[in-house]
Length: 167
Image 1 (tube, one colour):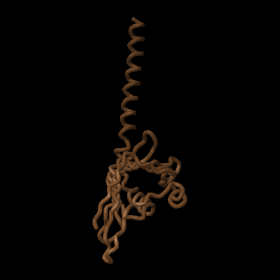
Image 2: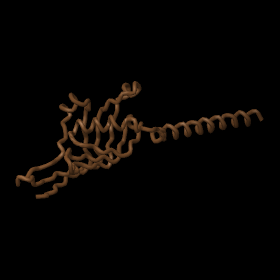
Image 3: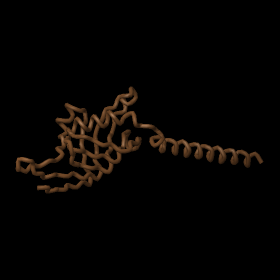
Image 4: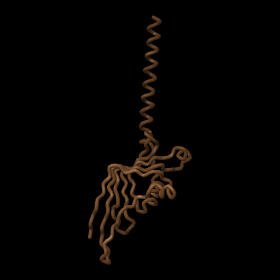
């Protein structure tokens, strides 16, 4: 009889531990979606605008803990700085990896940015003087952006380039 209670207690404690671990894992996995990240919106917008020298429209911001802490912004649209802006790029999602230590202090330090399925658009337009010119987004290289903005790495995955001739 003692063996029965001992084995029953052992099985019940293991099942209890597994249930607790599953609930804790589920909460940990879904925690980023429960956070309100609108406080980071102005900082991210300013960071992207100063880096690309254009207007930026930012969609929904969500956190991501795995594989590294960061933010996912979906969608992002980069516009020309003009009265009637042209779309220079539209991105389905931008993955921003963050440094952990400054995040605990409430500061936002970007390690790298990944554009997932971007669409870059090069516009050929005719000016009022009759000359034609190209309007396009210029991507900063990692060395120049590190000095100005503090971003170590840029990545573009599954992107496409479109050329719109409006002359």
